[in-house]
Length: 184
Image (cartoon, rainbow, N blue to C red):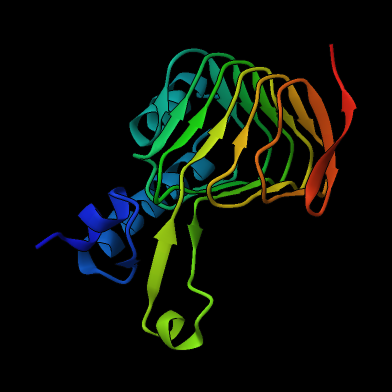
């Protein structure tokens, strides 16, 4: 029989209140708290703490505060910048490409709950991976919903909610976000 963590990592319905997952989230919250309170003049120390929480492939800078559910499902490419208030609910993999810039108060949420009220009341949860391509810019207060993929060279306008995949070379805005301009 699979553990709840194994179910989550396999993309199956799972119980988020499972003791192992609860402990993983507590550990990630503690690391986020340490990162958020770390001396801003000690950049190497802050970067080391971030690298313990998430997987980076190159240069990165994350403005505090940062919030994540687990951290171990976040994979970030080279030349990454996140402004204040980034929240990543990473029950499923979050894969972020190279040259990605994130404005303040962006939410990247792989987690969701069943629509059925009885099922939802039991604490069941699902996750779907999120992929962000290279050369992407997410404006302030953007929300990425479970299972979306953003192509390469995508700009998502401030306040947009992404519920469907977005194509390469596009400016996308609205709720739900949709392409309004093609980029070269």
